[in-house]
Image (cartoon, rainbow, N blue to C red; front, side, top):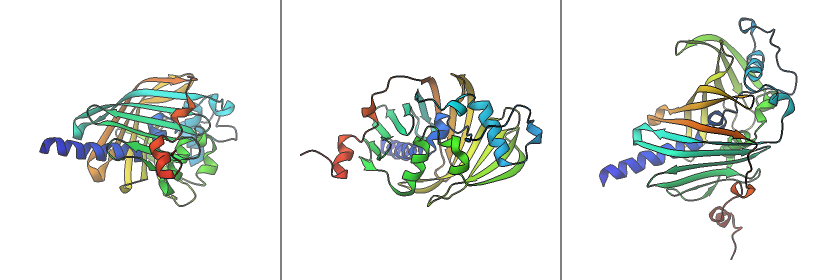
Length: 280
């Protein structure tokens, strides 16, 4: 019984922490661009000296024609989430519908589900372990950026403060360092590391807000594959050092343009009830 209690405690912390981690990074939507034309192929990696040049090169490598056309689309991703400290492997599904709808479901054997979503207006969460809630405040602001499928395409507006931090060796790879700071209450900088060789984002350090307060989250993106002209990381490692916790998300399927029932994005009945919108 004691072992199960500890496992439940670790699992609860791990799943809630994943909810606080960047969904954009997990879903591979952090290859940013801007409305203006992206950098051309003639810009060599060793010539980059500004944050905008580094990001534009990453967009060219990861977004391709999507950056220019911004088609209405959906993205459905399915895979697994491992929490080694809890000895758990769960299933995960993340669904986006442009411009700003999001649904994520994590199913843990013998423990139940955690769902999180937005219909473009209300941001909500339900959990077998924690119950329903409406996501508000700074946490909502962060999730709103992540639910916007193309928000990164307007990075100059999303992150008005952008700093170039030069280059460094990171885990045996040479990277560019870029720090981005959004406006608003959650004006907490995030640091991104872009591979000099590939131009792709390989790590992001950020402070995420959650029910448990602010947490420093390190996200590493690996195993990039091309899907419909986009470069998508099929493996993401999320580390919350203060909790001694890691989650490893591995996707086995990424699809665009799939049929999606809009009802999955709407607040479920238990959330509507605490909003005062329930029937009866």
